[in-house]
Image (cartoon, rainbow over all chains, first blue to last red; front, side, top):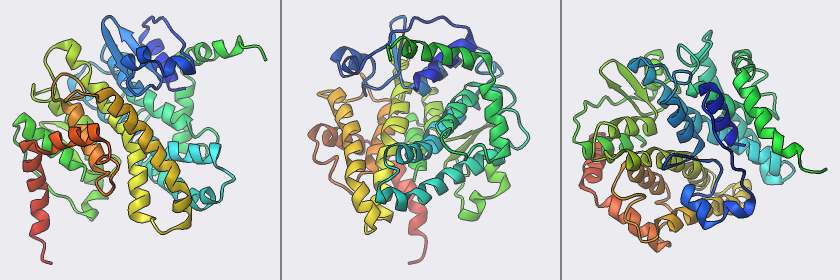
Length: 197
Length: 197
């Protein structure tokens, strides 16, 4: 699912790529590990460069496209910290909540733990909404940081946490409406449709 | 504690900085939030640039110093993905374990949840040890990625998880022995020593 980030970034930047889907047994192979050491998705090869970690791949694409990072150095410099904020300060809490809701919802420990995890998520989202206020984007224009942040907020789509915060709901709706994301999602979903029911 | 990353990187790069310690009430202030939107530590100002998120700050310093990132483009390109791997794929699990051990050790839910969190940590560390093998560093030489990875492994110092894995124990011992880290730790600890007992 994290390859959606990379697909979306490539669509925004107008860069072509050749996709190579991998299966669970490919993922554990030595050949794939040489490309992606922690054996996770996604990985990308650009010439002789082997690139891994969706956040790093998206930033790498962004450095090659004004569509994802402004060319002015001072504004440009704000993109990378926001990507780290989304992936290191916000996503871990959201990921904890998703794991709890999707895999452990009926377990006793999860019922006790749940409210603490929700509170941690709310705290991070409150800081994000506070920063955004009336802004359309995290900074002056759409960047890789908005792309990554939107994919992090997407993980909460099984809850009403984003929907109940007007600032974040509107922010997310603007991201979801981007044609590049819609194309990326269509490409992401295509292989699943060819699997017989 | 995450400012240790930044202090360590500045020492490795031989760059001077002027520290400004903040207190809990500074951290919540509008002025500090303008510098660091999620109101966490650390933040840095370089000329007119305001920089936040320890991972982004360390990479920013690294881009200005051969001591933290090789100048050869192909080797250079491997640093950033490893920083993301440490902060997005490894640290969240380690952070979950630390939170559980340090703040909830005696709670019933934590006793049930604990083994799952430990297993997630072990899985990530196994992938890391598998990659490292006989390597001294994540890639050919010491980079910002080793610095960040070592600060992530440090969070486990209350456990024997790293100590029990010879590859990781040796990797971590080589990082802890670096003079730049020892200087950074001494500077980090100094203000605490001036607080009356």
